[in-house]
Each structure stands twice: as C-alpha cells, then as structure tokens.
Amino acid sequence: MPDLKQISDDADMIVCGFAYKKTDEGIRVFDLNNGKGAAVISSDGTLIETNMDDIEFSIAQKYYISNAKYMEA
Image (cartoon, rainbow, N blue to C red; front, side, top):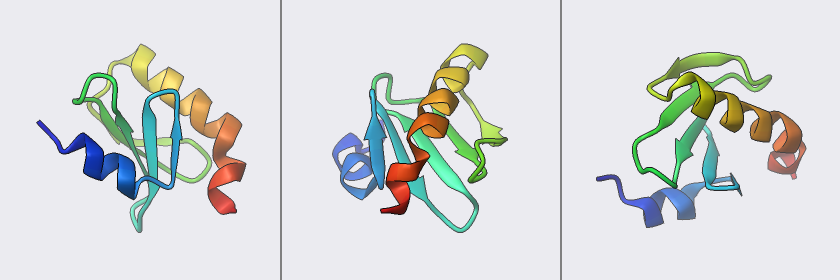
C-alpha cells in the first residue's frame, strides 16, 4: 500500500480525498480514500493515464477543474 501520509504531505492541493501534485509529466492525482486510484492529467484536466474507473476519474477531474486556481498560488 502506498504511503498515504507522504503522498498527502507532498501534495500541492487536496480536495475531498484527492491529492494533486504538479510534475513534469502533468498533474498527478491520487485517491486517498481507496489508496489505489491514480491518474495523470494535463494542466487543463485532460486525461493522460489512469487506473481509476470512469466515475472515480470524473469526480477527480471535476474537483481539479473547479480548484486548479488554488494550485497556482
């Protein structure tokens, strides 16, 4: 199981159990609630890669799009 504390500490933003971290590849998203769901999205929210199901990713994407402005602070 991934180190959820480390993922949370390294995150640039956490919204409703999803941790978001800026990287060179894009934005890494991790679902802290289930400990398995992960994705990489572009800065506009477009999917690059994921192991999340469609509903889980849709929720994470909506949270990102609604709150992305807070990552730039």
